Each structure stands twice: as C-alpha cells, then as structure tokens.
Image (cartoon, rainbow over all chains, first blue to last red; front, top):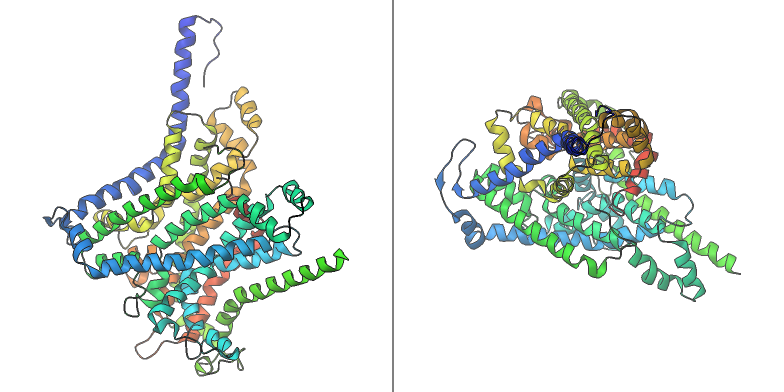
Length: 314
Length: 277
C-alpha cells in the first residue's frame, strides 16, 4: 500500500506514479499466476513438445528415437489411407452432428422462449440429459439402438418402418453417433432460448404493425438477432468434432469397417495401440493447424453474417 | 377471434414440447427399467415397456460384481479435489482479469481464449509423455494439478460475472485503502457465492463424468474411476446388460441430484454464458 506523504514534489510524484504502476502490474500478474503457469506448462510446452516428437521416429516414453524430419507427416499425409479415412469421418460426422443440431437448437430455443407456459421446467428437463456422463449416454444408446431388442427399432416397427441395423452398418453407425451427440444438445438450446429472449420486444412489435407474419418475423428479425449464438455454436461444433472420442470408442470402437474411426480415436490408437508417438504427435500438429485454419475462416467470415448489437468489448 | 387462434397455437406448441421432452427423458426411463429387468426379460423381443418382474437384486449385482464402491470412491476423491482446486484458483484469476488493470492483461486474456479453442486431443500425446516422465502416470495428479492451476472455461465464466458487478463498489473500497486482495476477499467473494458455486458444480460434474482423463492416467484396476468401471461388466461369457444399466443409473443419480439442488443458479448461468462474450 502506498503510504500517504504530505510533501509533494514533482520528482516524488513521478517516482510514486511509476512505483504505483509497477505495483499495479505486480498485483495483476500475481492474481493470474496460476493460469499463466497452466498455459505455459500445460498448453505451450506440450504443443512445442508435440512438434519435437513429431520430427522423431518416437518409440515410447523415454526413447528419443531417430530423427525423421518431416517423415512422420509424409507417412500420414501420403501413405496412410486410414489417417485420411479418419479425417473424412470426422468431417462427415461433424457435419451430420452440427447441421441438424443447429436446426434443433434454434428450433427448441425459439420454442422455449417468449410466452411459453412452463418454460422453466421444460428448460430443466432438456438440460438434464446434457450433463449425464458421456459413457452412460454411449452405453445407453447402444442398448436403445440394438437392432434386435432395442427401443428405437421397436418404435419404428410400430410405425410400420423397418428399423436400420444402426451400429452394424457403416452409414447408420455414423447417424447413431450423431444421435448420441444430439442427446446432449440441452446446453445449446438454453443458449439460444436466452438469445431469443434478448431480442428487443419493440422490434418485433414494430414488425407486427408493419404487417409481417410470424414466419417473416422469425426469419427477418429474430434469426439475425441470434446470429452471435449461432457463431458460438459453430465454434463449439469444431472443437466438439475434434474431441469426439468417448462415444466412438465405447459405442462402436471405430467400426464397422472403420466407418466411425474418427480422427481423435485414430490418434489415440496411433499412440497407445501402435506405439507410434511420433506419428501421433504429427497428427496432433496437423490437427492444431486445421483448427487454426477453421477458426480463422469462421472468425474472418464472422462480420459478414453475424449481427452484433452495439460493439464488442474485448 | 384472435383469442381462439392464439390458444390453438399455444396448445400445439405445448404438445410439441411435451413430445420432445418425452423423447429426451424416455432413454433415462429405459436405463432405469432395463436395470430392473431380469436377464431374460432384458433380451426379449419385442422389449417389454416396463419390467414385468422387478429384479432389485440387479443393483446389488451391479455394485458387487465389479469393485463399484472402490471405483466410486476414487471418483469422489477426484471430483472433490478438482472442485476444490477450481473454486480456489478460478475466482482469483478471474478477478485479476476482471478488475486489476495491468500491462499484459489483454495478452493473458487472449491465452485464455486460445486454450479454450485448442482441442485437448492436440496436446494429449506430449501431455502424457510429460506426466510419464514425471512418474505421475497411474496417480491422480495429472488430473488434479491442472484444476489447481485454473480451467480456462470457468475462469472466463467467472470473469464475465465479476465484470457485471458495479465498479463503484470496487472503487469505493480502493478509496478506503483496500488492496486488491482485500477487495477480492471482502467485496467480490461475498457477492459471487452463487457464481463460484456454479463453477464448482460444473467442475464436480465434469470430473465425475470424465472418462478419457482416467482412461489415460489411471491404469491399474485399483485406480479406476466409476466411469471406467461401467465398461467392465463384461465377463468372459457374457455382458450383463441389466447390471450395467443398474450401475449406470447409480452413477447418474448424484449428477441429477446436484443439478436439481442448484438448478436455478445453473440454468441462470447457462442462459447467461455464450451470449455476447
């Protein structure tokens, strides 16, 4: 703390100001110290380490292996068909999850905002499945989707539809994973419903006076007003696709015929099943670069379609 | 005349919502009832919509055929430690980012955003090597230590919350000669109990639900958490689905209870987060 002093000279004031400035900086760094340590040791260091590993023919924890240059990258990108297949699966499943997922989240969010009686309880009910442990969700959907005694195909049968073999079929297994992801959509629904609540009432009322019907109002006013939430949803969808590993591991184990061998799972296999740490690290760096690329595209195009009310503050 | 039409659309809306809720909740009902069916009934086609003969013994089997309570105990230990780390560290960092002006703050804030955007899979391999070289694989430290260094998402959430408090309070306290730690301790903390509790609840649920972290670092059977344990119901002859579902229902129970207890705070925060970062 700064001791109060009575004699104020110019020199003293300047020195005190500087001291105060340093003191202030010091406080800030002190409060943020744990996080800075976290970022340095658990984000920057592993990323750098990952790059170094990716240059070596790396075998195990202690082995340094032979320097391979960009050989691991070459192996993955030029000769490893399974790697490309895992990339393709991540992209396809990611789109399968995010496309209909966005429609659902927007639709349900709209239904759970405004003058909906009981929206509090509906919100709670839809949110709850999203906090169920992912393993439980995967195991449970494995049962629900069982082609023989599962509930889903029973329901389809009672509607006169022959249920698909789900996890036994390359295409349907992908949709099964999408279904599992949609089950946890509650958090996004709440996000959208909050965003819809924030659309200024006057805007909607003005549109009513101008004679806009409910559909027109939805697409011309409410939807553009929740575009920041859609942006948030898409950024999350990218991360979700690149960390999508528990359900493919527990529910399908990458099968059938590698149809659900997604990128993160293949990376895990490279590391722990085939003990190819160098290739795994190379894969991780390719993933980091792809993430950056994707996010750059998303953030670059943001201004074109995301509508912000007022400025952004950070 | 518009009154009638309004009601009709309202009824339609409610009907749709109820149907959707049934869709979301029926799987949970299915889990519990599968956990109560006998080993023959659970495989029957067409499946029975409710257990014709409730076998409560499944819950005993679920907790005795695998070391259920030991693994649940590990999960509780981890969840408590991780929650503790979170509620100690995250508010401190969040306060620093919200109310302490210092050179480099923008940079620190940027690192937070970067960390939330990097998928954990991109760092998992070197991370594992680092912990292995520190001889910490097969301990819980690789899961606990990061929590004590703050988790980016929760720091971000708390920072947003702190920013929403009136600056006048902070300024008044500083006028009275309070230093930053005192402002944090005596002004921010009492006002943010609910927000910090939400961060703690999220950390707790996140840890309890975590499958992948323990899969990497808890390698001995004795170190398993309950989420890993749920995949261990297969014996060499068969998988007892009804035991597995009973066990699964037991691990869901604490999560649902916690959510019900703090639902108002949680929903408020969920509604708040994401919108206008």
